[in-house]
Amino acid sequence: MGASEDVMGILQGVWTKLQALPQEHPLTQTAFVIILLFFLTFIALIVIGCVYGCCGCCTGGSRNKVSAV
Image 1 (tube, rainbow, N blue to C red):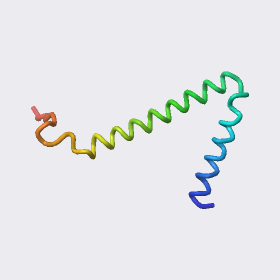
Image 2: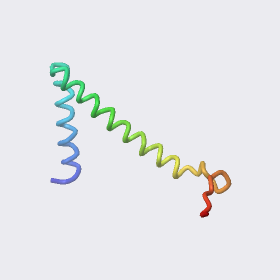
Image 3: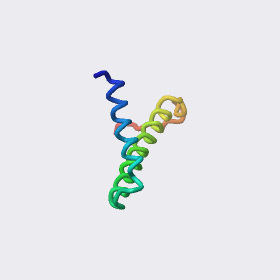
């Protein structure tokens, strides 16, 4: 199996779970929402970190400089 087939298998499993979610137990629904929020927060932090590190918004003059004592 290639990497693309693995990803498609994972996405297929997630899609199947999403389709069955309205009929699931409320605890299962809550767990799914918590995991989804954790994943979205993780992705948002990665994007913010990349934008902050790569966009050049902190040029040499605006960075806080820490000096050794």
